[in-house]
Length: 412
Image (cartoon, rainbow, N blue to C red; front, side):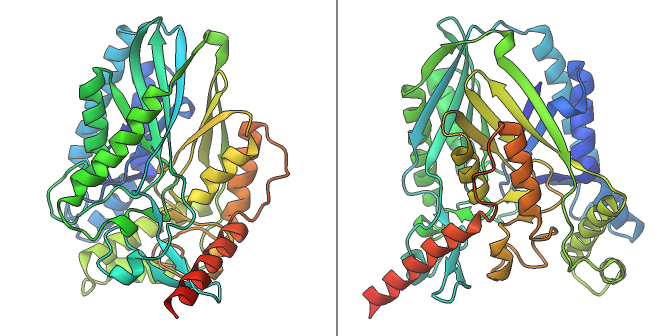
């Protein structure tokens, strides 16, 4: 089983496929047993070999993607996997811990009393009035899974759901505040840390971040504190090979009804449009062709004793993460999203009727019915009952409307 986290904005289509296949070959396993996730920093590369090939056919060469660089990274990652296999050490225990991350995560979608998105609270929000809204539906929990050889820690995996930006679009690649927190904790403990972004599609630091540069370290310190708390509260559990399992299911996500092949192709061919918009059309076309060809994507679950880690696609809304925990309250459930990045945002079914950026035609390439597909897959992987509501966003929407009413009343 190979778990890989990359400090890139997203890895999609043939980029994601080649990444998994190369790591699988290096480990002597199958690509179904490889999970590749991005952390989604915005000052970072994108990887989509399918879209890049389409863009190049229409005269766009290395203006957004740098596929030779990406393939070199994949090659070096495969070398690292081979070395890791050769240097493998036995694990006698796993450690499970949870911490709370304060004043980082906030919901980006502020609903009005009519149930529609009134404001999008961007990850860096300069409008003080929008920052004042309550956090909304978030998951403040930092999850930690560590691997031990008796009393010696070998590696730590951490999970937290939020967009990982403080200030961004600088043109210089950086790991932003989650990377600073991860690297600091690795330095303090002397244990390799791998961090995964949870279902943070509709979550950002906007309530606590106006984009000031000093906030990067502030947010990093708060995230590192959550990692430290999870580490300090770690409970070690003996494990054997029988306690380690991997299961994946292939699902077909329904495509967005706004995807019109002719219009997408026209945008790609239109040299008068900005390059970014033409490349976005190439990404949409690559995804559309895959879906129309009947291709599916893998959803996977790692079992380590009493813990479960779900490996999910796209910029997933936090409600999926919360629902997974509710499905199996008897287990330690973590989630890594931002796997196959091709679908872009994946909202809850109700979110598509609420408006807002994340579920608009320029941001989400799937239909509202994607919720049922993913919820059914999560239930299957977690061996959960069907008692969790199928419409994950309904209760969250009701809470957001109440928050809005409370704030309006207070303002009056």
